[in-house]
Length: 471
Image (tube, rainbow, N blue to C red; front, side, top):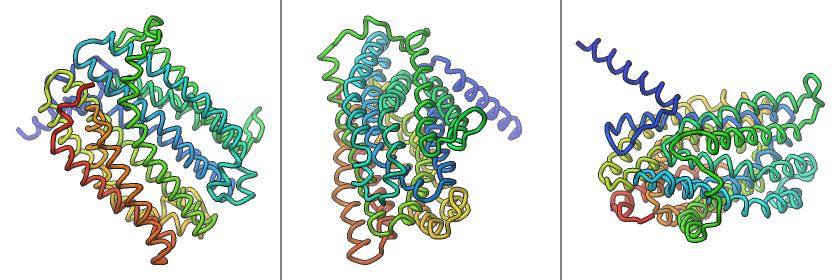
C-alpha cells in the first residue's frame, strides 16, 4: 500500500514538473494550493537560481585575474544593485497589478498594464546609463576602491552601467510573466541569458579562438550580451505568442492614470529594494575601509555565494506573491493566506539546508574562487556568520513578498527602512568600530538584522490588513 502511495505521489510530482516546464496555462485561484505552489515555484526557483549564476560565474573567472579585479567587480556590482533595485521594484509593482487583473479574468487589461510598465522603464534608464558611464571611476573612488582597482575596473563599470536597460527589462518583463502565472517563459529567458554568459565570459576574458584577450572588460561584455539576448527572447514571447498576456502596439499609447497607478504601487517596492541595496553598499564600503583590499575581496566572494542561494529562495517567495495577487483578484483572501503559510514552510526547510552547508563547508566553497590565504580567511568567516540566519531569511522574504503581491508595498518599505538603516547599519558600525570587532562586526550585523526584519514581516502579515488593499 505504501509503495503504491509513493509511486502515485512520484507520478503526480513528475506530471507537475513537466507541466511547469512546458508553461501550460493554469488557474491558480482554484484546486490544490500545494500543486499551485509547485507549478509556480519550480520555474521561479530555476529562474532566479540562474540569475544568481551570473554573479558566481563572473566572480569565478574574474577571481583568476587577482584580488584587484575581484574588488572592482564586487564594488561595481554593489552599486549596480541600485539598477537591480529599480528593475525588481518596478517588476514587483507590475506583478501585483497584472496578477490582480488575471485574477479578475481580464487579460487585456493585464497586457495594457505590462506595456505601460515597459514605457516607464525606458524613461528611467536613459539618465542612469549616461550618469554611470560618465562617472564610473568616481563611483569606484566613492566606494573606497584602491587607485589601481579604479584604473583596472573603470572600463568594466562603464560597460555594466551602459547595459542598465537590459538589466531592468530582464527583471520587469519577467515580472509581467510571473504576474500572469507564466513562470516558465521567465525561467527560460534566464537560462538563455546565463548560458550565453557562461560561454562568453571565459572566452572574452582569456581570448579563446578568434576572440582577443579582453580581461576584466570581457566579463562585462559577456554579461551584457547574455542579458540582452535574454530580453530579446522575452520580447519574442511577449509580443508574438498566444498566451495569458499578449501585448499589442495599441497597448503602448500613453495611459497616464494607469502609469500613476503602477508607479503608486511600484515606488514603495523600488524604495524597499533601494533601502536594502543601499545598506549593502554601505556595508561593502565599511568592510573595504576597515579591512582593506583583502577583506573587501573576501566579503564580496561570501556575498556572491550568499546571493546564489538567496535568489532561488526568492523565487519561491515570488510564487507566494503571484498566488496572493491572483487570489485577491478572485476575491479569495483566505486561499491567499494559506498559500503564503505553506510557501513559508517550504522556504524554511530549503534555507535550513543552506545554513548547514555554509556553516560546515564555507572554507572549501570560498577556496573555489580564490587561492589567496588572506582573502580565503575573511571569506570563510563571513560566509559562516551570514549563513547562520538563513532560516529567518527564508521566512522573512516570503512574508515580504506576500505583502508586495497584495499591493501593500508600503509596509515592507517601512520594515526595510527600520531594519536596515536604523538597526543594521548602526549595529555594524558599533560592533566594527566601537567594540573593535572589525569586519566580523559587519558580518554579525547581517543575520541579526535579517532576523528582526523577518519577525516584523510575520507580525504585519498576521494582522491581515493586506487583504483589504485595492490595486
